Amino acid sequence: MKMAKASKDDIEKTIKFFQFIEEFMEYGTHTPENHDAEEESIDLTDEDFVERLRAFWGGRFQPAGVDASWRRVVFGCDVLIDNVCDPNADTLEWKPEYAEKLAQS
Image 1 (spheres, rainbow, N blue to C red):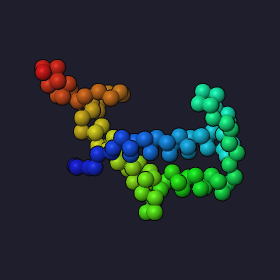
Image 2: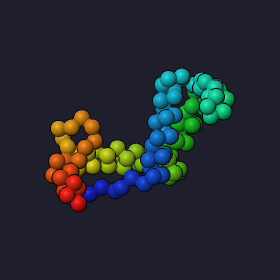
Image 3: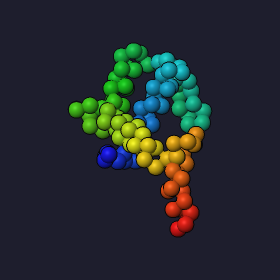
Image 4: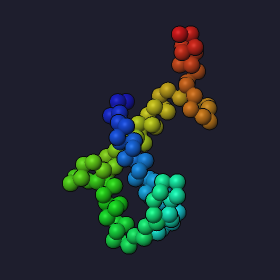
């Protein structure tokens, strides 16, 4: 199976999108002050939240969004795991035949 490779930009957009969702799930529309990043807290209205979500998502009028990137990131990872990772390992390990060849080189 061939699949388009996710670019670093695809990965970054996907990370930022899911960080935004994670933050919302944790704090709702109020983000706490972040002393590590020197960010002030933000109170978003429902409308503000939807606008920020739409900006991250993108779409046909905002091609820089995550709307297509997440598929390349998630499904690309799935294809790699299926094709090169040891199905019996709980961690990312080479399939035994690949690990053996790599060890020989």
